[in-house]
Length: 195
Length: 108
Image 1 (tube, each protein chain N blue to C red):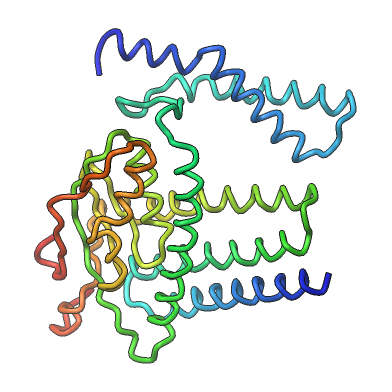
Image 2: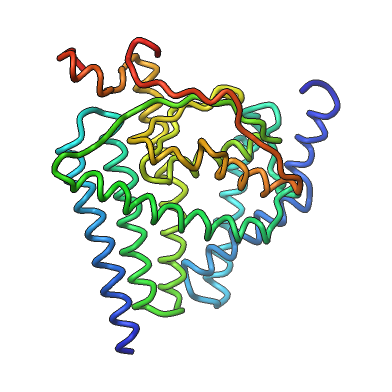
């Protein structure tokens, strides 16, 4: 991204709204941590939050990738709440699956590397998908290069929700109303020569 | 109160089972990548269960909110740490273990 859009987005990271939002959330965090509401503790809180915002200034100024931004305007909040509980359900299901694999005496693991490309609107969506894959037991995001995901999987049942496009679609639904297929070029590698 | 205690005990026991499974997994699984499945994910799940048990025990108090924040931070930090480890391992050229390399008797 070059020229004006980049500067606009950089400005939006330091807008009044953005800074106020960070201040309020950090202040709420302080109050939850301290639990006191008298003047002295609140003053210390304001000073600490100011210090944190100053320290964060350099971090926020740096652009780690091209569509780096702070606002979550595109995120559909109700969908996000649904996704959160759906993800917890998936994690628990997969956790019991891996539990069964490890505790079985024969230990029927079948490690494989999966490569696929995704068609997601933003880096945030890719980040959410990558973290969800890693949080689900049995699958582990090794690398994300552009839109290429490299995932290590413990056995064949573990990557089922990736193969039938279930989890990527849920992530797409977080940002986008339309329902389309997200992944393409799905590739399973099961021998050391193909890497 | 009794129901609260029972739910707490059940959640903590499930969490301990998952952490035990993580420890067994480190010993049994063959290579770095599969071991990081066992350590990171099962441990995360175990800690999440144990802490949610403590949240149920504590109720909706200030400590309960702090525990929920701990759950949130662990759930955010753990996949990133695992991903960083696995990524640097692959970039340094550590080959994953596959079933066919075991049959040939090659080094994994």
